[in-house]
Length: 147
Image (cartoon, rainbow, N blue to C red; front, side, top):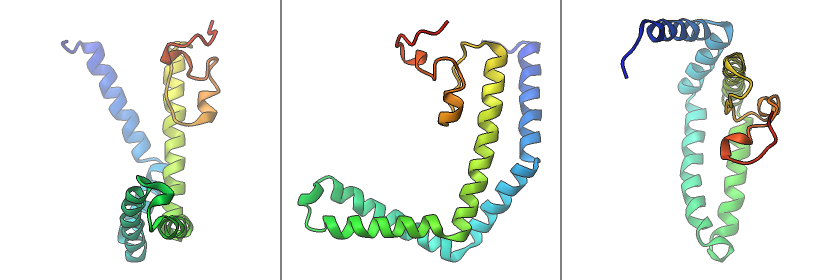
């Protein structure tokens, strides 16, 4: 497939839109929170510890409750997950990430619905998925009763 002038123009507009998002207040906040997370040694150590424990947890899960360390590892992964979720820098980053994702979801839905009401835009966000008349059910080949 070769690029037409119209396609090139659309790609240029997409680049402009992405630049606007990157330089928006939400984009700036996301990058700031990401930098703070990357520079927070305590948060990085906690994330590293959680990743290691997650690997151990996945190993234990293969055997389930019959693994000798099942209860210990399950309890520890929950403790670490809570600690990660409540860490200030990590929490702030996750909030900024969520806000940016919401904007990207809104833009995707806007573009998709502007083209056609039948366009399915997977957002991973139940709010946006229920906004369409089908809730994203048609894409899997089911009969959702779309009109």
